[in-house]
Picture 1 (cartoon, rainbow, N blue to C red):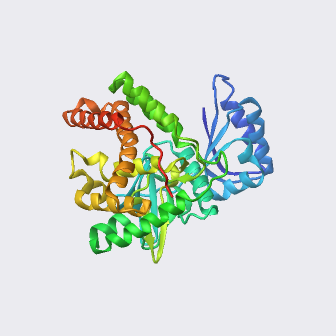
Picture 2: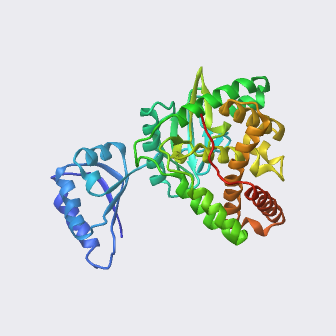
Picture 3: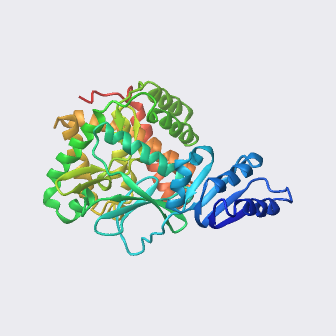
Length: 384
């Protein structure tokens, strides 16, 4: 049952307010109660006691659409710890706004010169927003330069996080408009990547990507021969736990240049694990997704397949500190094993293999994966 709270609730009208609420609840058939505070201007301790009385009967009581001023009262008195109290969020439109980043869980738009908003794909994204804020703060404390969200807003039917990024440009935009800076972008990109991978995360603070990779294996198995599925499972299982940080979706749209500072964004995919998992996601961002549709990289990254290939190859060489073609190919092949596993899993889970394009991509990724598995005995390599 939804009950509206209006105006001021204090010692002058708390008793009458409680009487009215109880009258609305007198039918006794409501399984849960939501108090809508959109029109509530103020609440005193007397009003808070009214809410406590309701909560004694309805344990899952929620208070929604609370103004910042009233929310502060709930927060200061500890009510936000006792029940679910949801702020009223200002509404932001992204119509006509420049898209500057896109990740697995949302898209980032510039809403004005100083600010960007990440709009989440999930319409009920408040828990995701809270998670990303927490892991972004953790990353900042551990020395990773990143933007921190300072506001949560409504965007259409979903939610968004607002960040201050003053005149920042993504590396994708730099590569598309200033191609002569490719080598500089590679240098800074790899420098940030090594900073991330050199960061040890306190145990239990971030998820282990190996567990997610095992899920990719399980969901990809229906498309693979039994022996291939078993070998794939064994290869992933053999990767030891590693508490070093990974970004989880590291590509040029998620690296920003603000003034002379490089910032990492889209932090909801932060995890820990061996760098082969990071390289596999990077391969997909520049190569894997586009092997049969090379024009598609332009719509996602903003630059062509040739640029994507060059950037990937040079970044891998800089990261590994070698120009040896055989050594580079060996590490790339290890990453590709996981890359194709994830792509096959994604295709099957989302039913994308029913189209002609999906069937062709699935057949290509399966063929490449099976060929790699024939000569792959380990997915480990020395990241130093």
